[in-house]
Amino acid sequence: MHNFRTVPDIRIERGGAVKMDVHIDGLCHNKRVFIVTDVGVHGLGLLDGAKEALREAGYEAQIFDQVVADPPEDIVLAGAQRARDFGAGLVLGFGGGSPMDTAKVIALLAGSDQPIEKMYGVGLATGPRLPLVLVPTTAGTGSEVTNVAIITTGKTEKQGIVANPLYADRVLLDAELTIGLPKMISAATGIDAMVHAIEAYTSLPQKNPLSDALALSALTKLRDGIEDVCKDGRDIKARENMLVGAMLAGQAFSNAPCAAVHALAYPLGGFFHIPHGLSNALVLTGIMHYNLPKADTLYGEIAAHMRLGRAGTDLIDEMQRIKDATDVPQTLSSVDIPGSAIAMMAADAMTKTRLLINNPRAMTLAATVQIYEDIA
Image (cartoon, rainbow, N blue to C red; front, side, top):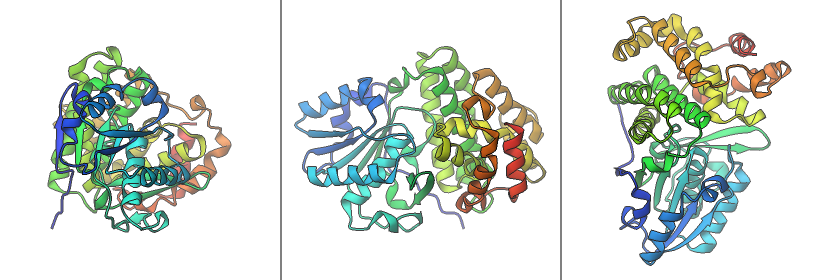
């Protein structure tokens, strides 16, 4: 038997953010909206149209823009307290993966009495939560349609909350919000989304026909769009392809979870604060080569769908070509990670059993060290 869940209401509208009152209609009983974002998104003015629409419609909004990459638990807890003090009737997550993940957990914490330490793991967060609307401003994480939130606990450790109450009530995809993304962010987040789709398709324990179809559709859109947005950041059609592709990939991996690419990427972010999409891009092809003895058929099916050929190596070659074409960094040294950190990162990666159990080939410590060394 296969189970498949996703967000019940997904809206795609260019310029839709300036009609935010319409897109949250019916969800906020007291017209008090708690907006979770980061200083970058706030400072760029991406929220301005949404704020004005809410104000004109009689909503009171409070903005919490203290989210940072790899959001620490203390920031999440501070945001939840602010939401409670404000009397929020709805949480609006507006930004990339970190603001959306933070918004999900804030909605849970502000809507229930469950402490955050009881939420980490799979299926342990029970809710209830406040109404939740998510609006991505990058095309990569797919967090807007997943039941996953990744939080940094302690100094470097990342833990996941994976539970169905994290699915938002409503999602808005507005490609105009992604127009200003720099080339490097567009490339790294786009490859991140492609990783989600590839890992979902090869996620053996929970692989299912719906996730497979979504993953393949996502890869078509992402491959069609990623080089275009890197060449012309104002190409709205390509931007929308990327945004929809990332969302489809998010739906896929939320039901057929990610695997070793994410497990080996997490230490790069946890210890060295490398952006998540770039971390995935760095380790992707090395892990695909390692997986090939067990994943050749599945990689070949993806390659055939993308009209690349029928061998697993055709897909690996294409992902390497995309990395080259988009100029993402490809070595640890290029992002200032010293070779002396490899043993520490490898040991940490091997603790990510929630992810490693989904990999088509069992990952070993020796293989993990070798993959890092190959990109040192």
